[in-house]
Amino acid sequence: MSHNFANRMQSVPRSFIREILKVTQDPTVISFAGGLPNPALFPSEALAEAARTVIADHGGETLQYSTTEGHPPLREWIAARYRERDGLDVSADDIMITTGSQQALDLMAKVLIDPGDTIVMESPGYLGAIQAFSMFEPKYETVNVTADGPDLDALERALAKNPKLFYAVTSFQNPSGLTYSDEKRQAVAEMLKGTDTVFAEDNPYGDLRFAGERQRPLMAYRPEKSLLLGTFSKIAAPGFRIGWVVADPDLRHKLVTAKQAADLHTSTVSQRIVHRWLEDNDLDEHIAKICDCYGTQCNAMLTAADEFFPEEVTLTRAEGGMFLWAEMPEGCSSMKLFDLAIKEKVAFVPGNPFYVDGRDANTLRLNYTNAVPETITEGMKRLGKCMKDYIASL
Image (spheres, rainbow, N blue to C red):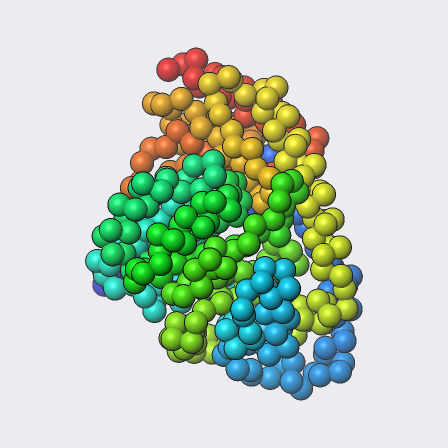
């Protein structure tokens, strides 16, 4: 059947990871592909108790329509945490609750991007953002991510083109696992001051630090014309689809209008359950458990890589988050490696979808949060063998 689709759909890639996850449904496949939190760490019992409480005590309000901006006590809780931990001058009025932070990307693109507008992306960059932004047909300028943040010379050249938007994941970047240093955050903020470029800082992984020192959001150094995205998907449970965006009044009002057209408001039930859980439990204690577990899993992956990967393959050394980024020698194809690896019952995400130019990449993303250390070791052993065989065949 033939359909007359909108032109914008021609340039929008399908979610590569969602396609790979179909392959990994086989229980014999060890998957490092999905960006999945460890379900053993979901606070299921505490959330169930929170659900019972809000339905029993506030059933009518909990099951009713709500305001687009979101549940006021939840917004105030988020704002208070920013004020106390990061020294940000943020109030509940500055926050809009979204259906996951992925919706914030979509709404941001609707509000800011016209066809042909220039936007700046990290390279490699988050594929969910690439998918959301490509719907609106922008021109991309890319900036390489180094061990401590963006290539500042490349960013300066990109900003000279007066881009509409600069999007970045500043802590434990997806896919690389790398983090902007405090020095780079301040340098980027100085470069953005005086420009018309909106800076969108996505921070889904910032709380998942198991080594090193916590950094303040870049918004602390350049609050004007900035957006800050957050989510409970990585620290509570992704099934609730509760995210948020911090924005100045002009931006926020436009985002609210766009959200009203999209879904009226995020699930009232989910918002109230999450807020009740936050009020009745120690979030920092819960996060500490997550970080302890992820630190062990990350160390298992790094140790196995040192033992089983070829010397020619390099790997990032993350201090938190959910991912490591491997790079094979020039001329290698992670897609060809994937075909070999899946035959050995191990999966990863090839680097291709993390680049806006569609290159045949020699890089790959590895997730360590959804497998126990013993499984990680076995999977890395299988993958290391595939790498050695593939490189030797070139």
